[in-house]
Length: 248
Length: 158
Image (cartoon, rainbow over all chains, first blue to last red; front, side, top):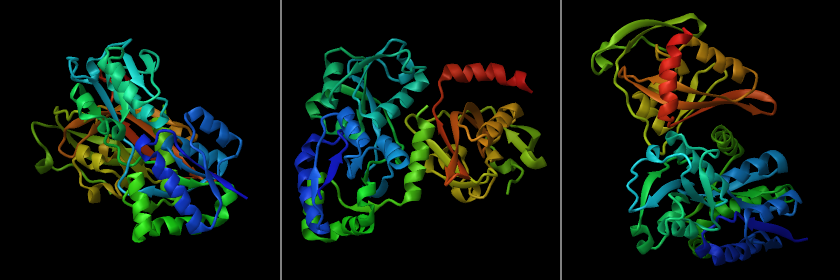
């Protein structure tokens, strides 16, 4: 029997091959047949989750809540030192210096990335902005969010901080950060589904030990991580509660 | 434990008032007109027991409240209670979370140095296996318009 692994579609494109390498590595280490399926968008991934097709997932914090509460998933690990942060940026020529100076009807570019959009919208609240009074400019990728700003098609953009930092210096020079979140406790997690739960301890141990293994280190590097650290159910529940408080 | 505020901790001119807190505790509060602006992009996070005793705070909580972590853990959350906040607001908070629902509101919080800061607060009950085990509160930067509305509204609620 083969199990299905997937990665939240907000992964950094540079790490695509890294996830395939990781999938090969984890199959060997756990002696489990796993197929990696990368979805292009959140909706198609969500459909697969709804059909109970997914057994292992590197999930964004927004989906983590649903996976635990509705689908019986449990957390395994998170990448050490990594957290999800958002940025609100504008064209460098835009005189606005504070989100409070953005007016109703402002054109905001963002992607479908649910937790980043949520954090971004929270950072717009001090300017009395919410979903009801902005003009959304939905973009497929963060590079396109940047392009919308450069072309003047959007007044402000919401970025995953990691994605913003990864933009070319040429693009970044033409943009300016208004706000960068410093939340620290919201993160992606590798999670295991009901059909694989009997192997949870084995998977968790293999992942935590990964940094001590020479090959494992190389695989981690291809994902842009230093190591994995264990996430227990209590920590995950805390993050879910936190997401619940923010998602209003 | 909650203590009276001390003159030596206060920065600037202050007023003094005795505040009746939850469970008939009275506290001497010294407060000033100095506002600390809420920092952009940060969240203040804390967890309390079902009785409102603080069990966890994050670094932003420490920075904004002016207390250190040791002073906060074990203290009732009402250590932040500002005399300008109408008791009705907190009654609404406790009634709402007591029903297992999420509460949201704009709150003027008291700092250790007598100053204040406005927040948009969300409190949710943490239920594990059907049992209430804690409350989590997250504060974020409020809209200035909403704060101005509260500055007008709250004095009418006493």
